[in-house]
Image (spheres, rainbow, N blue to C red):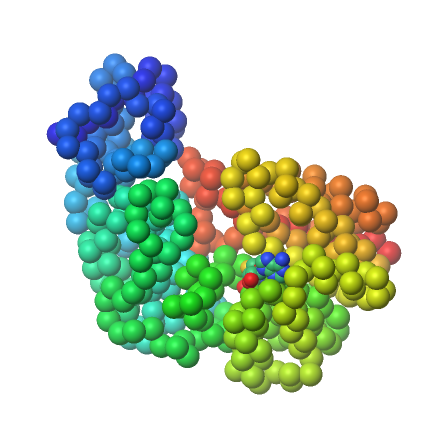
Length: 398
Ligand code: SAH
């Protein structure tokens, strides 16, 4: 049997059921440990800790499937894990047919992301296999997904850079069923959105902001809205449906903006209420400030500024800049929805950065709410890394 034995003291995180085994914590490796192979993980004193998937090229050298010595790592395990993940979403996600069905470590399937768009035969599953372990068990996982959801169409978007850290090639393509429908759309809280499964970012749609888009929609009535980093118009469409008087949206991706404009027509909203700017947010915010533009509700949902802990300082400056100008562009009584999806930046740090921006803008603001991803992105108690998206809702004090 393939076995890895840890250095003394390195068993602690596994005893807390955290699933990662770092290369630096391993003393010895025995057996034929090929990529994705199941290995028994033992403490320095020989105690059983976990069964894990081996990943020879990654710093995270193995990821635990189970902490139960009697649970075999076989097809049935993947069926159980997928079934549990699907049942959980059925219970907790309402009013949307765009759902994060599998959220990696949080669903005890380390490295696997699956989003589900639409329903039944017309539905589309989109997967990212981001670790050697889930890559190895791909066939079993796809079978389980089709069986548990009744959705025959599975597309792979394993083109995220993280795959390279696992020594895996970037691949995309159909895994089961038909080619993705180029006109695929989903309905979230009564708003329809096109989802470009083949060419869109990630799996095509930012499912994680569902609850936050709803909140923006609920608060948008009668407001002039500015949506920065709008992608395909997620927050913009929610604001239009919520009765915003106008919505100005900025993104540097022309492709995304084309889909966003299409979403306005798809929903039958008046195109005059929506302005789409193909531009850099940093530059445009400064221009708006120079022009004295003002808004009643601003959304800042930038890409991940800190891909890792080494980038925190630079990322903090970028977050601070957009929040500072964002605060200045708000009318008194206006609302700011501001987000970070950098795992390396904690909620505490993000709140500090935003508070600093408010001070430097010479404004007062109340923090009305702390925001996060929806319940389909659960955070396992043992795996706090699952909390990557954090946000704040602020009101500028009049
Ligand atoms: N809020 C969106 C998701 C935003 S993803 C939703 O709910 O769907 C981040 C977006 O920022 C991407 O669409 C990317 O094209 C855009 N982007 C990244 N850097 C940018 C910049 N400097 N200026 C404008 N847009 C940028």
